[in-house]
Amino acid sequence: MTQVNEWLKIESLDLEAQGVAHNAEGKVVFVEGALPGEEVQVSTGRRKNNWEQATLRALRQESSQRVTPRCVYFGTCGGCKMQHFHVGAQVAVKQRVLEDNLWHLGKVKPETMLRPIEGPTWGYRYRARLSVRHVVKKGAVLVGFHERKSSYVADMRSCEVLPPHMSRMLVPLRELIASMDTRDRLPQIEVAIGNLDGQLITALVLRHLEPLGPADLARLREFAAQHEVQWWLQPKGPDSVHLLDEQVQQLAYTLPEFGITMPFKPTDFTQVNHQINRVLVNRALRLLDAQPHERVIDWFCGLGNFTLPIARTAREVLGVEGSEALVQRSRENARYNGLADKTRFEARNLFEIAPTELAAYGAADKWLVDPPREGAFALAKALADVHQQPDLTPDYRPPQRIVYVSCNPATLARDAGLLVHQAGYRCVAAGAVNMFPHTAHVESMAVFERSS
Image (tube, rainbow, N blue to C red; front, side, top):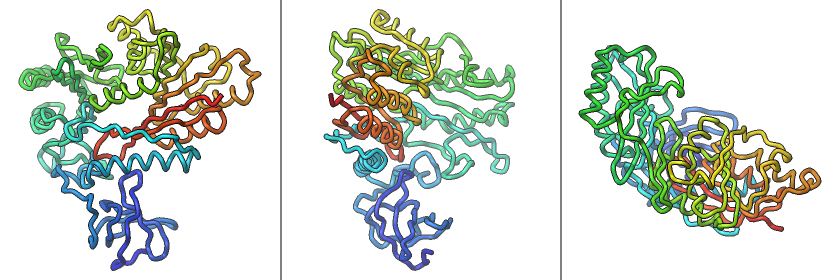
């Protein structure tokens, strides 16, 4: 048990951006708000047999990387966890998290560590899901992120990671919802911002649990005109989303280096940080190095974020995604960019795929893999089975190179272990991507080359 007057030395940060220390008994102590190298006293909240959860109470030795948080709501709002940590140090920690996961979970050591991808650290968040709560005791409506480790909505009037125009809109949104007849039945506003030719287009998706009356619809239209936003309404699930008024500008983002424009709906998955996404796509394609004679498969292709740029150089690109609706959107985007003749899209469940099913897609020179947090275990396992049991698919030729883009270093490490130790690949490079500055979220990229 950690004593009240005991000084702890913070050794590292965990994946939740908590300081990690050991007390005099050798028990692990996770300390909210503490940074590596600091000496702290703590107030213990939870105790288990092997660990304790604590908060920072006193600081004797301060880290040289500690900075003053820019947001006045930091510490209360759960949107950011690392604003007290210099952004360069944040990136270094994320790179170390990636290396540690690859080694400890996958027993994989990349031959080269790529320089981390960095970009804007404030005003970068072009997607957000804001909770809405009418709090009768406060006599106010709250619009924002949840408080840290709580279901309560933070009482916030600005946000430093949202674009400035969206941050300034939080108070008007509170006032709008407070004026509506259905204010107690409006739990969420989803924000999606497009950037086309330097112009920001802001869409707000209002989740409403009962039909909106004429007066509330009029209030939304007045707000849209005043703040230059477009309202989408969501009465039920994601498939029910529709525009309040049809005559609005299309949401899109661009990949100008490839001459690609990507139209999207506000509920489609797109990267939160558009500027980092541009750099990410550029690096992924340089590492993939698709040649004019090559066929490439883009697994978990989404809207075609990688598929369409790859099609600018490769002979043919097959994009595979789990949703038929997403596949249809990808086809539309390919036609929009004049790439329908070089792309093909198919829908299938990529969390279940046998070696023979994999071989049925035909040989590809290279793969781009960009899975959700669950990773791409089934694909990696199918490749491993092909390598270890070649008689299963005697005519199949595995890809020579795989570029794997990940939003979860743990599942990347798991899959990397399969590719390296069972599927005949080398991990030639890996690096972190700071897609979400000031959060503990780690995006990364790894490159695998076939050994023989």
